[in-house]
Image (cartoon, rainbow, N blue to C red; front, side, top):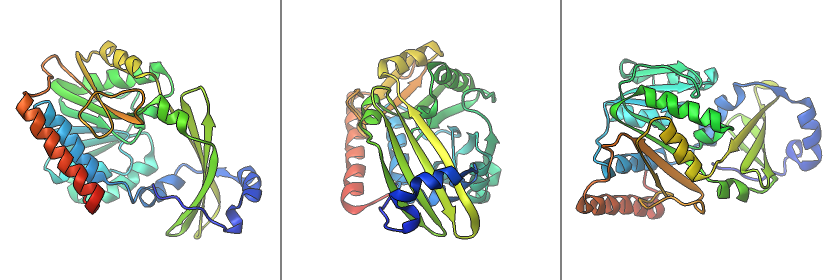
Length: 298
């Protein structure tokens, strides 16, 4: 996410208190600027990682896919371009409206549903359910996390796979309080990080103004992390017989010291492939990382 400091008087620290006092809650404000804020996120790079994770466990690109907390549909688009039939659910109606516009060329293979990822019911025939970019960290209690896992398990077919990324406690504890300001096409935003030491959680307040709309629109986002072993336990309690955890963009065991990890869960048949195929996957992913780091590829 591209954030830059600004000397704009409208956003200097002396005025922040007054800005928050005047703020109005508008849940469509962040949806309107989300794709601009996320413009530097390499969706193609992370799509390749999802494919490598699947191949590492003997899976191909599935024909029926579900994304939890799909936002504006940027990752869904990659699966659609591969020929998959994709469903996305999100609680935010404005985010789904952005997704519908973005994915209008894929209407025959794309379905968007407004729903809460903690409690949804769909036909249990998905081959892959995934969630990315910290969405599971927005579930602030173990009960909510378990509900999301259970709902996902109920929608997978017998050989389906569930993949999601997860910010660790060490990552959230490393965030320091502070302010940043950044601007884009037609908007300005104050980003306030709120550290919560010892709680494995983090908050960010956004105050957004638009050149073509009066008022200041505020949103509050909060993330929570639970120990990785506890997340693994909740997945198994939800009915996943096999649970794997991988480190940041690598095919090695995830640790609490990592900033972010990737969980992959499924049935008893879900096992890593043979050693030779493991090595092949690792080499393929190493090449993707090299291209991304040195050539800004994907």
